[in-house]
Length: 529
Image (cartoon, rainbow, N blue to C red; front, side):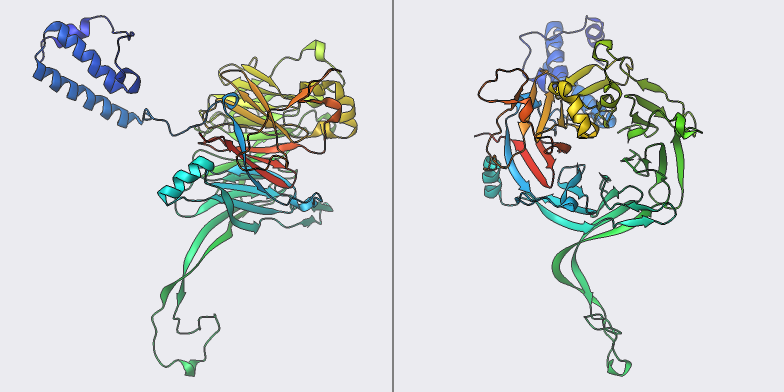
């Protein structure tokens, strides 16, 4: 064995200094190699044994990394903080006409897990899926990278829900798509969940480029052939055909919610999911449509004693037993399904004490949480109320670790916002790929980005005036006083009919999708010149 390795291990721990080589910053193997070389040189170790020891250490560390599934030194997520990124226009989907049809208003937006597909749902019950173009030619790819990342084009469009009528309660059920959630891909097909107020559907989206022909009992058009016209036995065979994308409902989950469904979330085990309405949360198995388990029920025995409703719910991205749900009273409850079958008793409750100085008639309304999202790491939560976005650490439920004001300048306008019902708007919020930035919407087609590292914020506008390819978006500012600068906008001139409620962020790159009424804006990070 190596007699001096005992001496090496008994020496004090090595600490990096300014003379450390670049390998120190690249990988643990490089650190071990440099450290062992220095130690053996000081102790007079032979060169051959040094080489053997280096190979042994590097192999051991590499095996440990593979066994523990540590990420490689080069990260695949390329997103940066929002405050350090220059955003430019990429695409506009939808009509350019000013007349807006109610059925065309976008009601939800969601990227799939690798960001290659982008799905939107509208109030007409339609689901439109956009696919990112593949760039096969290297020269074309280099040219495209200088101009823009691959564009998203229509991949599939289908009618997910139809208007229905509940004859028992004499209620009309709208076809509006409330939520879309993608399932992780395991084969050539894609699967997604879509829901309206009452019914959830599991859709399979697949491609078909071949068809079967040469049948004996029917012709190529599908018509039945006469028995006396069959002269010989044919063997069916497949022939090429034009690529066709099919969307078919594989499961329909219905009749489980008395109230309107506001959110669905797929579990990390990819076997179950939850659906939440105003008072209950149900747990479903993706393969069972006629049975669900009620895991949260906040309905009081006397409805006159009702003080809060459920506004959003989501599963933990890594731990299949944990989920959270938010309420109209500004609280977030973390529940553990291992504790009890009915999760009426929460494991943690996240609630910020109200500031008495800001107490007003509208305090309860603006404190209602409209959306809650886990970070990709599962360590943090973001919640969106009417005026702010808050970041919560799962290990600290007493107060948020970060608070970002979205449009604090509207606090003086709450009375007029209450009269026109805008105070009840439900804004969504999203994380970027590496949880370093947050995005949410506002009025006048403004959307806000917050960099958690630099604490800088950015206000951008989704406007048809900025539709030139790769045109850099100029930051917008809202003036609250009487004197305003040239580039600033007065609070009184904001258009509250133009609002950004639904947004999505690409899971791996700086590409965002913003729904503005019946249009879908796609913005991207400005490519290097």
